[in-house]
Image (cartoon, rainbow over all chains, first blue to last red; front, side, top):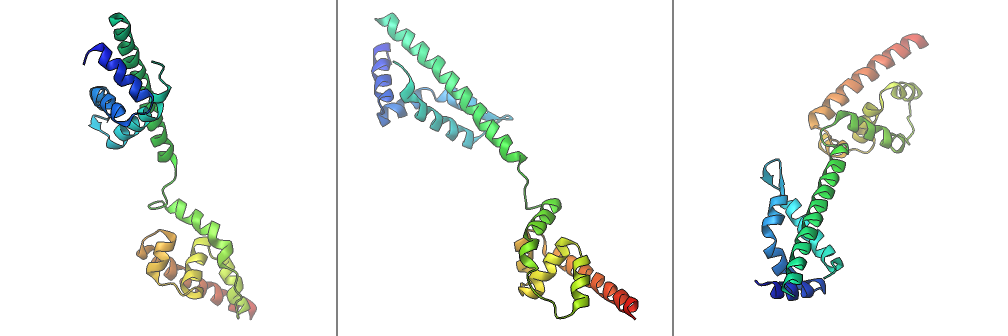
Length: 63
Length: 130
């Protein structure tokens, strides 16, 4: 994905487009999964919590 | 333009890192908060506290025998509660165990010890009364 495509995708995500948010989440899966570990094991609840947190907050990002 | 879009990507990545980090901190904080709460399932202190809290609701009945009433007051709150549930509310030991969140064996033990104490106290009261 080039930079322009990313900008368009991000704009859609910030405006509340669900599929765009989903794509953004997929793009950042390594970051999210990496943060979902507690004591060396992946915590599925934490993973869900982070996803929900991002979905809630993404509309506040200024493009 | 290309430079601006790269900046945007970098900015968003940094923003995501902060959001993810904050979410994790918040989650762990919530976990610790819940861990500090007392579990009622396997905690005898908590069980006795529950008994004490419910005690006032469970002794609102009259004894026919005045001596028995006085002796009953001498029992500990948890034993009074067990006896009340068993003999006033007609609960089965299993139901009492569920109500107090303790084992059935604990209910049987409390009942037998309480009855034994009652017998001893009544015996003592009768001797003193004579």
